[in-house]
Image 1: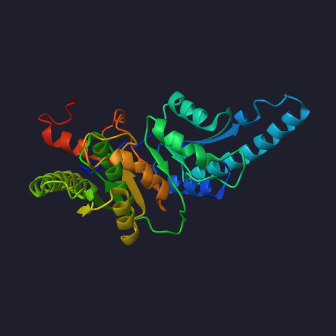
Image 2: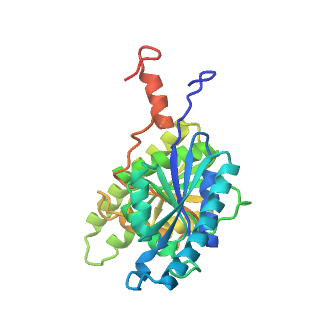
Image 3: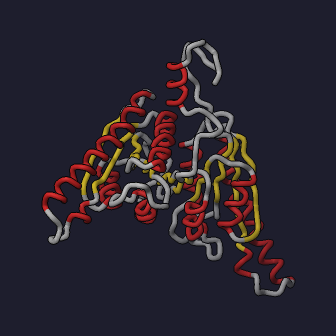
Length: 327
């Protein structure tokens, strides 16, 4: 529907928020709900009892009581997320599963066709045998949809800046589109950041002319990549700036985020990108492990298949010859 000539974006309809009941998981849930709060979405609050830890134990009365304890913890943890989501006006459902946490989360996400997964920190939680943090890396690596890893977030914190790291690859472009969408929902400013990895130029054996030409090539790639993100953000009515840095990519991105008091970092997939010497995909794991703020990882395989993005809607409206005509 369009109102007063404005193009309305249809957001994701299903979000899986995984929890283990820890404070980190609660903060992740709070951040995910606040950041992705939009009408029409459904939240699955998922807790997994890690039965793999007890696979060799006899299924006796002691085992049953232990599982019952975890069932109680799980329902309490999932209910917290469910209540928070409902308080934000979202449809929500609590789910308690059994098995390998990462596998169950991934299988449930695929089975329910969710559009995003939200998990807590990559570090271990305080609850033994329910270490969502230790499995969140597996979820990020194997999820077919974007994964938001939230850590150390407080509800009172302002949410107005998003750093979108790019290397010009398809994975980074997908991540940028998603980051711009979220910036639009929250009225946030976008920083499009490209880092020239100068470690490749530090060998004294390299020819100076080759170094100069190669550096200029990467500088050109960086300016084109960040300018594209900036242009798309501004087209969507979002304040944006292009940033070109040099050094160790992960360190430079994290340092910039801290200095600018960024609220979230958006990166491409964990896999390698197609641009040599600046493998954003290969360094995104370093960013995940060391970031003090939430990180959104968008895999290269992810596409906006279920809906038009805000930018795509604008482009479609501009190119349509017949008003109301569909592709």
